[in-house]
Length: 232
Image: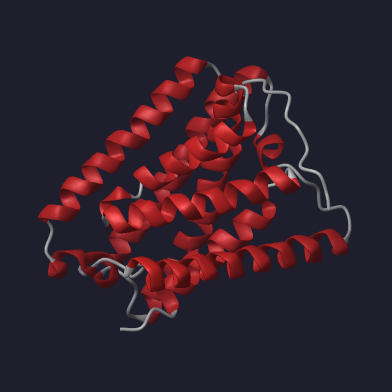
C-alpha cells in the first residue's frame, strides 16, 4: 500500500490573507443562507443564466484572491494543484482515480440516504437546476469552474494553511472539510453535514496523491451530473 507523503507544513500565504479569505467565504455563506431562506421556489427557478454566470464569476474570484495571497510566498497555482501530466498515462491515471473518487462519493450519498434519511437536494436548490438546453450548457461551465476553483481553494489552499497552522495533516483534513461543509450551509443542515464528509473524501485523495487533479475531475463530474441527470 502506498504511504501517504508528508508535508513540510509551510504556509502558502500570510495568516492575514488566510483570515480575510476565510472571513469572506463565511460572510458569503451566511448571506446565501439568509437569501435561500427568504426566496421562494419560483424565485429560485427564475433567471438561471444570471445565477449561473454569477456563480462562475464568484468561483474564479476566489481563485484570484488565493493567487493574490500565494504569490507573495512565491507559490503558484500549479504548486497548489500538484501532480504533472508528462505522458498520456498520467492523464488516464488521474481520470481513473477521479472516477474511483466519484464512485466513493456516490457510495457516501447512498449510505447517507439509507442511514440518515437525507441526501437529496433541498427544494429551492432542485428548482435552480437547469431545464433548457442553454441552461444545461452553462451549467457544465458552472460545474467545471466549481470543480477547479473549490478544489484549489479548499484542498489546495485552505488545507495547506490549516496544515501549517496545526502542524498536522489530519487536523487540516478535518478543518478544511468542516469549512467546505459550512460554506454549503445554505443547502440545509443535512446537506452541510453530508458535504463535510464529501470534503473529507476529496481531502484524502489530495493528501494521498499530492495532487488535486483527480479531485477536480470527480468534483466537476459530480456537479455536472447533479444538474443534467437529477430526476425532476
